[in-house]
Amino acid sequence: MSYRQRAVADELLGRVNATGRSVNRSAGALGAVLGGVLAAALGETFALWVVAAIFGVAALIAVFSPLRSARA
Image 1 (cartoon, rainbow, N blue to C red):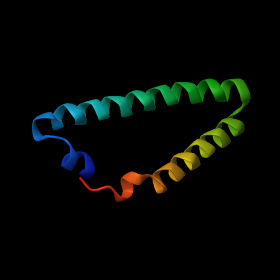
Image 2 (image 1 turned 30 degrees about the vertical axis):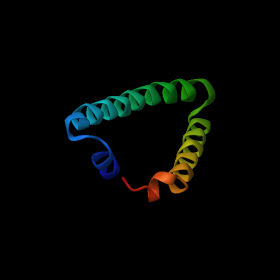
Image 3 (image 1 turned 180 degrees about the vertical axis):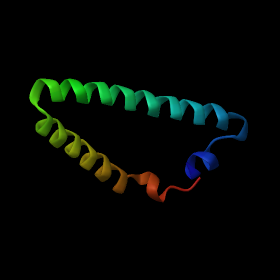
Image 4 (image 1 turned 45 degrees about the horizontal axis):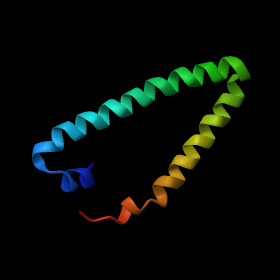
C-alpha cells in the first residue's frame, strides 16, 4: 500500500485503490467457490492441503519479490 501511494499520482490514487480492492474481493469470492467445489469433489483434507500449498507459494513469491526493496 505504501509503495502504491508513492508510485501513483495523487489524482489516480482513488481509482487505483478501488480497482485493487475490487480485484482482491473478487478473487476471495472466486477462491471460496473453487475451494468448495474442490472439497466436494476430492475431500476436505485434500482441499486443505491444496490451499496450504497455494499459500506457501504465495508467501515465497512475497518474500522473494523485488517489490520488497523497491523505491518509488
